[in-house]
Image 1 (tube, one colour):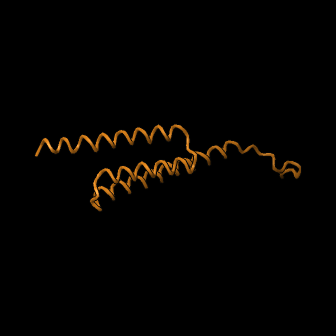
Image 2 (cartoon, rainbow, N blue to C red):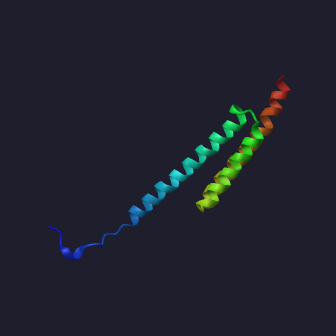
Image 3 (tube, one colour):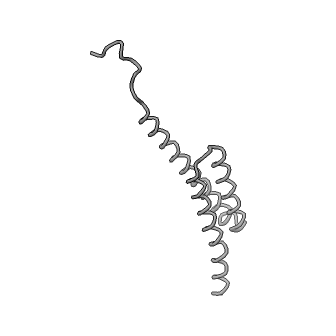
Length: 100
């Protein structure tokens, strides 16, 4: 049987760290899904073009990063995505213009 005097002295730091990691993974995943849906919706479904979708992608990334005070790794990932998407937005139309 448990001793009555030993209550509330369990070390829970590992559980807190695990739960924090789960929450951060959820925020990252949800944010990237929201960014992707907005980009693809504006660019292809509505037909506004790549650049309005890209702007929405950047704005959503900034809002999520600022609202949740995310780490530098998040910002580095976002900047890398922004650079790749911007390059893609410049290169693909140039290549398609050369083809046809």
